[in-house]
Length: 261
Image 1 (cartoon, rainbow, N blue to C red):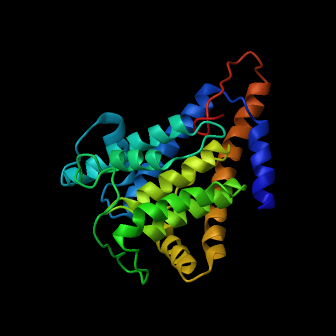
Image 2: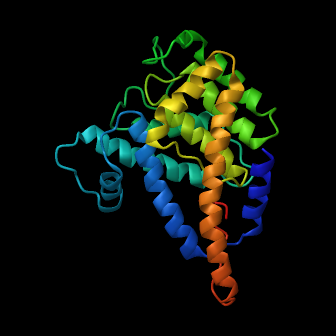
């Protein structure tokens, strides 16, 4: 955590950032996040196909319409997160429900934006999510609990895990959990985290360890991913900052990472 704090301070010291450096970095990250978050859930679009769907609006031959809609929906939900996650902002239950609605619009409209009313099982997991009757109260308790956690990284980890454990939705739980997690990180001035497809099993293993009572295993996994994202942004932005110092007349911006630079 000390390393994260130091890197967070370095990132804060770089602000304000040049619009062009932030725009290019954020755009590339956004596509990667949409691809990775959907791929973890079984979406068949490749990274390049995801980029084409989002930037050109093309339909990829041989790929399901559902996969295209999932890419467009998640990108829209992520834009909403960036708009809402202003410095110090808090995510509400209504925000989460609205993000979930955006994720499942035109894919599963009958589930979009509402808590589940039936039992669900998580494929490949021993964890049995709670009875749907308990979901509203459990979600209210989760949102109350995270407000008592001062450290934003711990708060993000707790919220993501809580959503995964409760599994409040009939579908889209993973994507909603990752959006909620990144809302908290962005609002605290951290970069967002995307889980690479190749770490899918490690990601699920960490969550299952938390189910078994080892929450630090999940928290440590998230911390490592956040540390990696910090390195990526710092490496690129510190180089950009050096260039800007050589050209002090260049325009600067108060954007965000991606929205609160």
